[in-house]
Length: 381
Image (cartoon, rainbow, N blue to C red):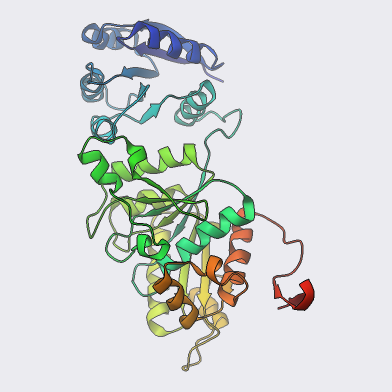
């Protein structure tokens, strides 16, 4: 394993000592030097040619972002990380636009090691902060994508007991806030614009999950902001469920690339089939492994005779899960702002979603999916 040479720059001597101690615990890193002079750091980097530059950031900006921008322009391809004790969303976005690879807030030694390992293509010692991204994606509206994302997030939390966030990146059609009956005071982009801590965009739901509203209305989230949002949430949560934007733009590509699984809901009609064909084309353009793609049909079939089996044959891809179509129950859940996995936990939709999330989480059911019967017995489906 090749040793990676590191330069640390931080004007605060106390904090620099903390970062220095973190770096010295990483076996594949050699700390060349640590300095407090932001002005002279660029010349030092040009002279020593390190593999990584770590820059400390404090409020107000002590020159770290300016240094990062200068280095990224003078030495394209040099991995630059910013380390901070605290930060605003505005600072993070400025750093990413300046060419910073990652912005870490109060990183532990293990977290810093994991990030450097990823950048150095070295296998991390342990999966620290390695939350799994599960994306629900359809290029057209009307497929039940947002409802499925909300219920999957709650189902994942119920089935695994782990920390789950659900992210509304589907500004034009999503409305996860209505699905969950949570009305966030600000979105992630609004927090960034107002200089608020990014935690202001985290909104707890009574089920135990957290809602993150990336933007409001039809505003698209820039690709660099999407990437940092995913990185940040994956360090905080075990699962991050994405209600993806229908539109094809760089941010959607970043989401798909980061996804451990891409769930495509398919209504069993011609419109649903065409949407699924387009979704598969977009996923294939991202060169994702086919095993990440999970096709999920809604309903038993259409009057025209389109069935899940027929869809699988046309798309030449297996159907991972089949959910019952319950438009009355689904609509009632939306009207009440109570997802059906909470409001009707033994209904066919909830049972199907729990089966889906157990498959995604790699859990083996103890018993076949069932609904409650008389006197506590279970009736097999």
